[in-house]
Amino acid sequence: MPVATLAEALPYVNWITLVALAVGAFYFVVITGWFTDATTGYLRFTAVSAAILAALAFASDGALPIPTALAIRPATPELDTLRRLGLGALAITAFAYALLLGRSRARVVLGAAATASGALSLGAAAVGWAPTLVDAVPLYVQLGTLAAVTGGALAAIALGHWYLVTPKLSERPLRLQSRMLLTALIVQALLFVVWSTLGGGVDQQAWEALSGSSALLVWLRGIITVLFPVVLAYMALRTAQTRSMESATGLLYIALAAVLAGTIGAAALYVSNGILI
Image 1 (cartoon, rainbow, N blue to C red):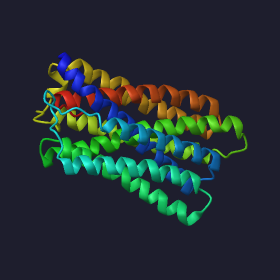
Image 2 (cartoon, rainbow, N blue to C red):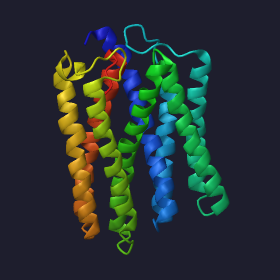
Image 3 (cartoon, rainbow, N blue to C red):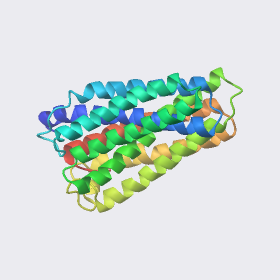
Image 4 (tube, rainbow, N blue to C red):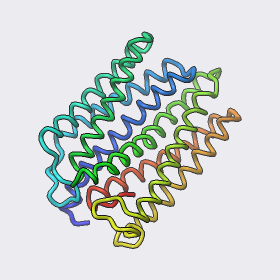
């Protein structure tokens, strides 16, 4: 990759990674808090972590360069503003959610507001950066999937550690998050197969990703950062079902490392070459 392309691509890859962590982690918090007996301490800690990540993404958003050597296009000023507003609103409402966690009505309203803000920011990014509206649809799906697997893995690791200080906590929260993460990873694997064989990126042809100049990175992405985490998430779910929480947390650590590498690689391939995997 030319130096000029790399210099332009890195800020966008950083943005996608931070937003994926923030949005996905907060979504997992809201769902886990609604359907399980997860402790208030865990929900508050992870919501604040998501707010901090969203704030970092908001700060980095203003430094995004104008893409001239990338496959993406510059967003319009209106979409730039909408994307930043979504991030700012996510940071504020996620933090407020953590503060007002004990108030059921405020919790529901703030959870819905933060969820919508994250979706808005991802949608504005997809529509703004994709060369056409047709390209924006698969890009939005990709960004949402990356958020689910990356932020979900982060939230699951934090939850695994919570069992060390709250040994009487039931296994339901970690079982639910492991199932959610496994489902998101399976969806990501199916999308990888579809996009790598049929195409889906900017002018991406069928089988081009698996045989072109970036084929090695694509194959590594598929095997190490898509299929391998599926196996790890399944193993984490099975160990959580037997209440082996330390083992489950260790497996989730490895899964997060693989997923993060995959998110960075997938983001870099799309913004630089328009390859969707």
